[in-house]
Length: 240
Image (tube, rainbow, N blue to C red; front, side, top):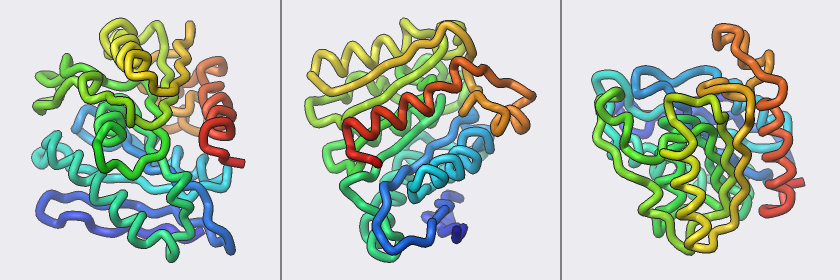
C-alpha cells in the first residue's frame, strides 16, 4: 500500500490522505470524514477506518478539513468537494472505480458527508453515516454555523446507510437519525438504518482496533455495523 498526503488548500490548512492499494484493476473508493467537534480529527474515525476499508479492497481517502482556529463549516464542505474532484480527475492513476465511489462520515463528519451527498453535483454514489449530526443543535458547542442537512435531501440523494446507538445523548436518535431517515423516506431515497440498543456515540468501528486509541471504548454488538454495511454495499453498489 502507498500512503501519501496532498494539500487541498494551504491557506485553510486542508489536505487529503491517500491510502492506495497497488492493483491492476480499479477498486471501489471511500472518502472518510472524521468527527471530533472541529477540535481535532480523531484517529479512530480516520486512519483506522481507512485501513479497515483497504482490507476490503477499497481505495481509501481521508479528508483533513480545517479544525481549531481554522474551523469553518463552509470551508470543510469545500475540502470534501476538492477531495472528490481530485479523485475523479485522477481516477486512472489512483485505480478508483468512480461508479463505486462513496463517502462515510462520523458525528460532525457525518453532517458534512450527508451535506456533500445531497449536493446536486456530488460524485458520491453512496453515503454511510455513523452517529451523525444532522440538525445544527451542536453549533454553539462546536463553534461553527452549520445547517439542517435533512432539508437538503432530494430524490437524487445517493443510497444511504446509517447507524447509531439509542444510548447516544450527544446526537439523540429523535433529533438526528430519525429526522434524516424521515427525509430520505419522503424523497424515496434507498436507505438502511441500524439503531443499536448497545454502544454509544463516538466509538468508530467499536472493536479493539479502534478501542486502543479511544479510551478502550468498544461494543461487540454495535461493531456489527461494519459487516452490515459491507453487505449493504454489495447489494446497492455491487461491491464484491
